Amino acid sequence: MKDSAFQILKIKNYRAFIMARLFLVLGIGIQAVVVSWQVYDITKSEFSLGLVGLAEALPFIATSLFGGHLADIYNRKKIVFASNVLYLFCAFLLAIISFYGAFIFNSYGVLPIYLILAIAGVSRGFLAPAQGALIPQLVKKEELVYASTVGSITFYFASIVGCAIGGLLCAGIGPQWSYVIVVILSFIGLFKILQIGKIANPPAQKSKESIFTTLFAGVDFVFKNEILLAALALDMFAVLFGGAVAILPAFADKVLHVGAFQFGLLRAAPSVGIVIISIFLAYNPPKLKAGKILMYCVAGFGACTILFALSRNVYLCFFFLMLSGMFDGVSVVIRSSIVPLFSPDHMRGRIEAVNKIFIGSSNEIGMMESGTAARYLGLVPSILFGGFMTIGVVSITWWRAKKLRQLDL
Image (tube, rainbow, N blue to C red):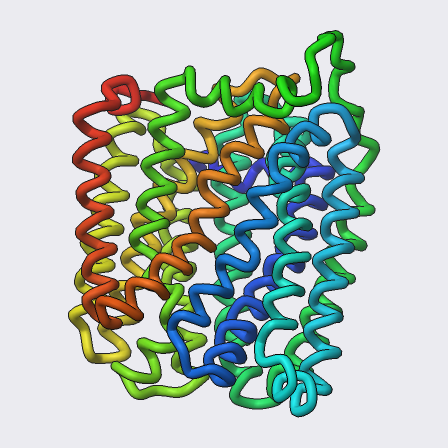
């Protein structure tokens, strides 16, 4: 029988980590759909959807470098646990203000939601680098590609289910009780984190460098490594400009004329594609010509974004979003393998922080870009613009990043 990436689940600590991720991401997926639908339902504004992303992105960017520094000097498991506690607290606050929504939203609009998302952004600023740096402590170096593949399958499977359930919950029980379910799922995820065995602290730092120099060491390392820089920049700009998902509530309402349930299904479509392709990659990991495959897939992602914008049928839109997820899934696995392979152990946290700033913040800033573009260009033209820009970024990267183009894993 052919070996697969799933054999890595035999490792007890990694299995506990993946189960924790499954429940936590399931909650985050539900919350993302509910927040987007709730904000749009209150404001009826595409620009407000863009602000949802910005509210979380700015605190995330502001804290990520320090979060990476902390992950290189302190126990990463403890940071992951504490960060998820803060994220759970945000879900609890969203539930509280939604139960008192008539008074709060009439008085303050959606500002309280933005403030809570800002706290969630701080949580992510510490969680993302610690979580990424923790994985190489759970598996061997030669198992990192498998760990990345299984991690992607888990993350996007949970996103699919979370988005689909989020749409059902919006239509069925409303935002208030949806957030309560997120809190329960987060509690289960925290319990699974506690089941991860004892994790050693990172190697002691011997350098006498200033805190400023230490914080930016990861940035300096990435910008001096052509392969890392090109891979992260390629994915960042693709997500930044190709973020059709960001304005899906408006697209579902104004273009497709469908409700919360169909919106939830469309929101889940890219994750469906990622899970499908990740299962294939579990048995056929992308090692040879990985750099070229990465570029082809990002270009395919841009093309699917264009086709989605031109579609007027819910099922056709679902298909193109799913296909975009399949292309994105390949690039996620390749990039998730490149970062740890090219990162020295004593700098993993700081380099992961830079990675998450490139990739994670581009999702939220991409929401802002999509919302702003939709406001000034129009809903459909803004999505078309993003798709063509993504293909343009791939063309420039192909021309400029020779080492990435020639990369084998």
